[in-house]
Image 1 (cartoon, rainbow, N blue to C red):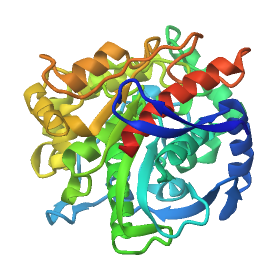
Image 2: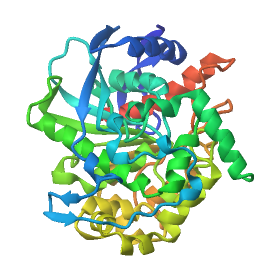
Image 3: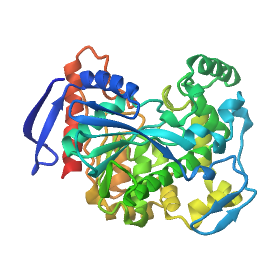
Length: 429
């Protein structure tokens, strides 16, 4: 693989001389796909070791489908709760199985990439992916770039019901094509309905609260992972390790909630780098053949933005986590709508302004640059979070900023290294 070392000055971080590795992105992408697909438990790749490990979620009982709910932290029980359900989106039962019972989401594999021959590592970076992702392919080189530039271990941690946490048949092209065709017949005016997004679109249209519960489960899974590390139970990670975050797209919402809520001060010193990410929910545009179709987007917006307070008043379990005793729920609530709770949200961002850095892309229509600025720097631009808009001299989309099939691969390499030189400089500083 073409790699060379150089000391460069990163334009935004003009005072930092950083040793970086300039990667051949496309070559790295292809090689890492092969390596990760064959790893059973541990393997080596160039100067790295790659580990496949298993995680058992202790918080799957939050999910829809459970009959009794208990908040251990506050010793509260919730028996029968109000469950919003819109059967108009329902076509096939196995897409709408009770979330509580999905085994793949309870016990799942995750990956760690770290410098080879290192002992328990003391610096860790979580890599959080985007919405409706089914594999780690495009993120593997991203993780390698972060590892190379920071010396940290990179934890590829999947969001609930995404990646390897989703039932395998949701990625069955034949089945999803059939569902997509049925869905188009049911909704003749639907936009961007594809076999890629039909499963998640059907699930969220029928029960939009899944967006919240899967997010909260993932939030607590990350906390559980960190606590296991802090107890010295992880063979690869030192119990006194520090944790940073590199997050893409909707993964940035998870990163922001973790950082802003700062559970037990676990994230007090953590840096968060947001790539194509950072907006509140109602300022992003998720209708895409790779993300959500138009019917699901309307249902999600209606639930989370237009009528959320009404649903909270009827759902004691959700109300407990969003409006009562959970600070992370309050943070989540403040990230749904730009105007709502704006003073609270901006005060929280002000506290961490020197620990967050955002790289939006000019041609991104899903998470526009100006909306990232509006959220992170505040309505009056009095929050000093750097938002470093970039643009590339080729066409790209939010879901695929570095296309591997481009006719001019050097342009892709240059764009990739521009992004990760800056991200690496921030995370390493």
